[in-house]
Length: 239
Length: 248
Image 1: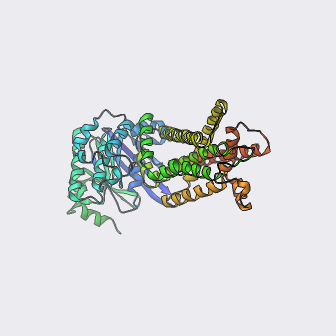
Image 2: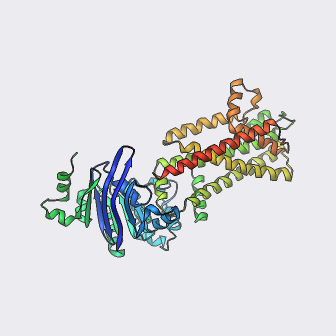
Image 3: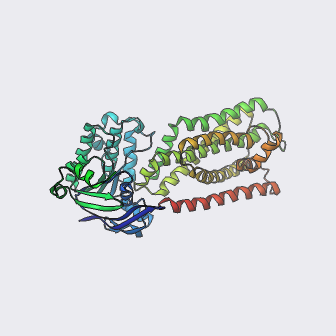
């Protein structure tokens, strides 16, 4: 099942042509990493998929809907099936973790049991803490717990593990891969950690000079002779 | 969903010390303090301190709630990324807007009752039912106008610190030039000039007149009404333009 189909996507900010022809597609159950240097347009690309940013040209189909022609109400309907984790994650700083979960449960009109989410994500010790007082790692875990409240068909993560220690990174990835296996949901993420791409992603898209220069499976990329995705990145992207 | 959002919006307001100090503490404390100093004097058309300054301080609470807890809060949410994160969830923008408006009306109405009770208990404030009803209706109109003005003013801020400094400075300017501290006619000429362009000064005069059943549609009243309406219309046009640009 096609989840995302992007053809010749273009987006500029004034004179800065960030995306100059990106082609991309995702099937149900894919885990796809989007890589590129800082300022390459990764976050812009994800924000277009999240339906919160307009684009100049091309075609973007998300969950079988051409998002260019949709009204605000129709976009809000699509967003019910998409969840996101941003870096840095920010929520209302004077709400406690449990209160945030309840608020977002209302947003998503979700049937998920908050108590179960708290157990699943080991949030019991942090339930009554203000979100603002949590460490960066736990903020990301809470953000992921909120993302899973809607049981989304599409999970978009913008540098979800940046700044996390190895234990928290592993914990976060265990939730993401478990979600992917359990629900068949699609995961699209950006990261600068090429080991994560190699370990967890089925496919990788390299955005370079505004275009999707490479879009292939990690296996195929490694089969072309690169020792690792890290080596592939260094070879393909100049400073 | 609206009820849940409103519940948490109110809860968040009560947890922000900064908002509480400038909305619930400073205006009533100033009202009591000024009353102790000038409580026996008469103002304007032979009005007592309570008749003049009760509507003034209700307006001051309304201003601080709307500008701090609504306007400044918008900047904080925008600059810290909260607005972006919320916009990525399927909550309708109308729900967030209505909740914010209802929150302002609820808190300012509590401020209305609070100042009214202080006036009754400390300064022998009396008001007739008809004046009370028309005053409350006018108060809601002021609420709406201030919400629109705050939305457009704070939409220009991209930095939380500059919005914070602006909020504190504008609070002082409004206190001095809005007729909340002492009659503007007793102030230096340059303060009177600033007062003329301060919409809160015009709102204050109108509210005092409505509160005391003395609203006459003379040239001063009409000038104040037209000035406020013109500012609101200009603000709505700016907000409309900004909303169109927002998704780019």
